[in-house]
Length: 109
Image (cartoon, one colour):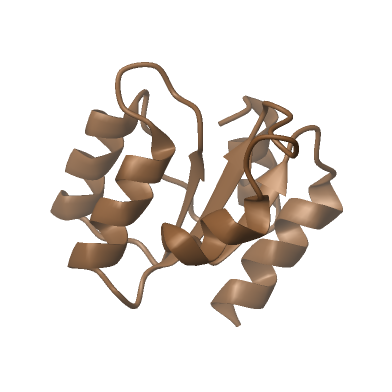
């Protein structure tokens, strides 16, 4: 997650729990579940698609936003990812504050 993203979400009134990697995020989520997870699709160690699939399997009502910093339009259809792996929204970096806040608000309202 971009350094500005947690602060931006906090400034908009959301409580944010950060994780340094996928395993840390999954562990934190299982200890104290939240209403929405924002994850990068491409991470070192464990990919976001695997994380999304696991979260969706174990927590079907969870809202998930997947963010990609890699331009994958020619290789992967981002819309297909949202249905195939279970993310509710897929956003590409760079993204505006309005895009992320809009998706968060839409999914949580």
